[in-house]
Length: 173
Image 1: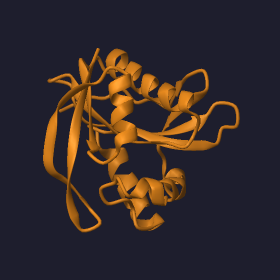
Image 2: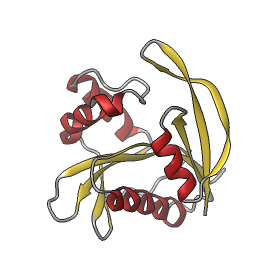
Image 3: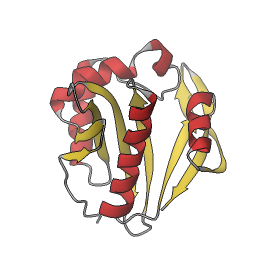
Image 4: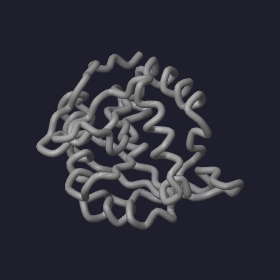
């Protein structure tokens, strides 16, 4: 049984991460269904009702931490980021559900804040990302920040009625 430290905010210089709540469901549904984002996602929520159900389930899941990324100045929601499949025995978790509509520096900072939380609050040794192999922009980001390519998972996602591969990148403490 994994015990996770509950946390309300992780503060940075330009953004902060806030645990998701049911109040974030409309925003999450909207951002995950944007045409330029949806094409890379495995089953984005079709409506707010579905997102509320999913959010309730994930809030109770002790192996998941979902955050909304907020602009520090405006306090507006600009994205989402998460840790899931948190395994404190293996000291690893999957980093995902990362969508940031803010600036490139806000995107980078959201990842750095999640990494800091992963490595120093949860004492994980590694986090990994599974990314749709067609999402070249995110894959290039993984490479630039020092992610180590760990292979391709065949038919990992089901998008628009087709099976799609994912690439795995690992980030060590």
